[in-house]
Amino acid sequence: MERVQVRLPDEDLERIGEEVKKGRYPNKSEAIRDKLRKSYILEAMVNMRNATEGLDREEMLKQLEETREEMYAEEQREKDSSN
Image (cartoon, rainbow, N blue to C red; front, side, top):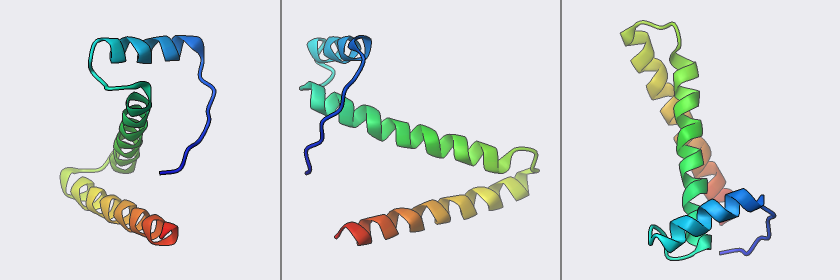
């Protein structure tokens, strides 16, 4: 795992600290990693919604499957290039 340094606004750090204090996360690093993973999920959901807007059910399902396949292929290429 590579170490990176980022600057966050005080209010974000306070919210993360509160979640750690409540026991939701073991530490701030894990909380930040979890938030980042969740942002990827949200981005994928928005992309799927945009890809299917205005389509009927059959077209929507076909477009969702194509989008899922494209995203999976992109993720695999990124994994392969990092190894």
